[in-house]
Length: 71
Image 1 (cartoon, rainbow, N blue to C red):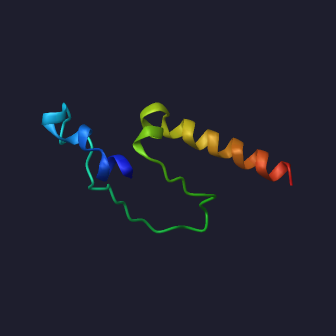
Image 2: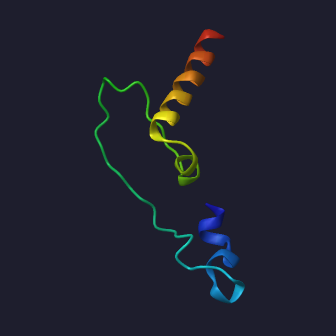
């Protein structure tokens, strides 16, 4: 959030930035939550730049398993 709105060096050409690199316009997706969904993952591009969707799902399941087995 702070980079989107407040990092002037990342946006202004006179500071060496690129005005198109950090934007304040979010990608918004709307969908119906179904009873069959186990969970919903919200993540930023930083996550999905490094991990595939399957890797994110696998990591989420691993964390959920650890959480519920420790209770």
